[in-house]
Length: 443
Image 1 (cartoon, rainbow, N blue to C red):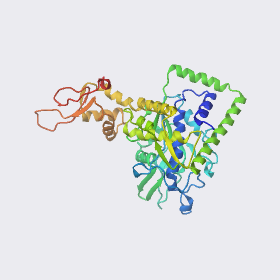
Image 2: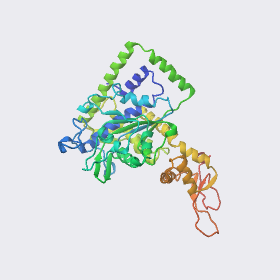
Image 3: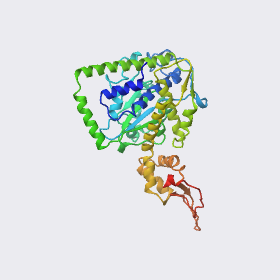
Image 4: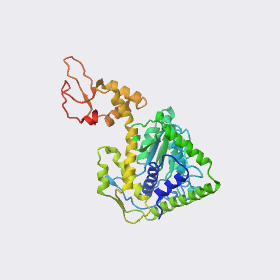
C-alpha cells in the first residue's frame, strides 16, 4: 500500500522543495475531490460523442464518463465537490513551483501525454491572457460555438493559471465583462449558459482550477472567495535564504539522483492514474460524515459558507487514502492528519480573507461614518472600484460582527436621515443599542 501523502512529500524533500508540507496535502485532497466530483456528475456528460451529431464538439475516449446515478445529493441537489485552489504569495515564493509540480508539461505528476486518448487526467497551464470568449466560448452566425474554449477543452481536467489576475483583469475589459459571472457558475455548478445574438452557448464542465496570485493583485470578486481554497505563502529573510540554499542543492544534484527522481515521477503518475481508474470502476455508493468531522465544522471560526469547502476537502482526503474500498459508503471521519490539514488550511484562509477586514476595522475604529462613505471607501480599498461588490462585502463581512453596527441617528432636523456605521464597542447613547460584546473580539 502506498500512502500518497507521504510519497509526494518525500518526493518534494528529495527535490529540496521549501515550505510545502502544509500545502501539498491540499492539492492531493483537491485531486481526490475532483475524482469524486466526476463520479457524482459525469453521468450527465455534455460531450459524449455517442449522443451528439457528428459536427458537435465532443470529447472522445474520456475515462471519467459513465452512466451511473449520482451518489451525493444534499438538499436534493447534485453536489459539486471540486476544490479550486488559489495560491497567494509574493514574487519568488514558489507559487508556480506548486502548480508545476503536478501540471507542468512533461514533468508534472498528473501530466499524461495520452490524456486525449483516455489515459490519465487532462492538464494545462493556461495562457497569460485570455478573453471571456476564449475561456467559455462564443457563437458564429450559424449559432455554433466557435473554437475550443478552455472550459470545454479541459472538462474533467485541471486548468492552471500562473497569474489569476489574467482572468480578473479580463473581466474589466469591454469584450469580457461577463467573465466574472461565467466563472462564478462554472466553478460552482459547472454550468456555462450564455444567450447571444447568434444563439446559445450552453454546456456543463467539470474542470478544476489552480491559480497563483501576488498579494498586490489579490482581488476576489464577491462570490469567488466561496469557490476557492486559499493557500498563503509568507516570505521572510530567513525563508528567502532557505530558497537560495535549496537552489544550490538542486543545481548540484547528481545524474544518478536525477534519474531516480524521473523514475519516481513515472511511478507517482501511475498511482494517480490507477486511483482514478479504480474509483471510476468501483465508486462509493454514498457518503457518511462522522460526528467528529461535523463538530469540527461547527467551530465558531468556520463561517457558514466555508463549511462546504472543508467538507469537500475531507471527501478528497478519504478518496486518496492507501486503502480504497469501492462499492460501499465512503466514511468521512476526522483522523489526526485530516484535522491537521483542516486546521492549517483554515488558518491560511483566515490570514488572507480577514486581512481586508482587519484593515477596515483598524482604519475606522471607534468612529461613526456614513454608510455611503463607507461603501465608497471599501470599493476603493477592497473591491477594485465595484460599488455593488462593496455593499455585498459589508453584508458578508461586517454585519455579523459585534463591534460593527448600523443605525439611523436620532435628530430633530427634517429631511432624510442616512444610515451611520459605527466601529467599536456598543454603549448607551443616541443610537439606542445596548448589546453585550466580548472585549476580546473588539479590543
